[in-house]
Length: 174
Picture (cartoon, one colour):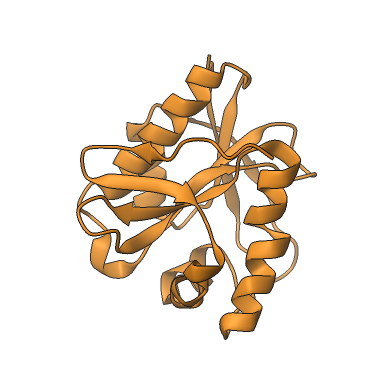
């Protein structure tokens, strides 16, 4: 599997996740907003984080050549979040996903990372459309998607006890 070049922006470096990121993954996936808006992935320790990486991002890298990337500060390398493309069996199109640790939100990092991921997808020219799925009560993520040029596509009605989801689309990606 050929690992693509890391993505660098003015303030960030985006790279494939590695085993050394396990403690960071535990922290991010247990953030109250991750749990509220994305869901509980049952990642409570390093071993569970490595299992999450193996069955999630690393499997995506093997299957598709893309996946969630570690977003780090370019100046010092500190990991601050995840951003990347996801492919779910239940959806026809690739999705943009992103999440930052609380101390790094509202500074423009998520937009910077997402623009870089989308620019790389455009350069590769293989995606006709990118979607994003957010809970309807996640105002910050919905606002970011709209700033990035995504438009609402559909609302997914939940099952009992589940949260309503809004699907956004960015078309065309090429």
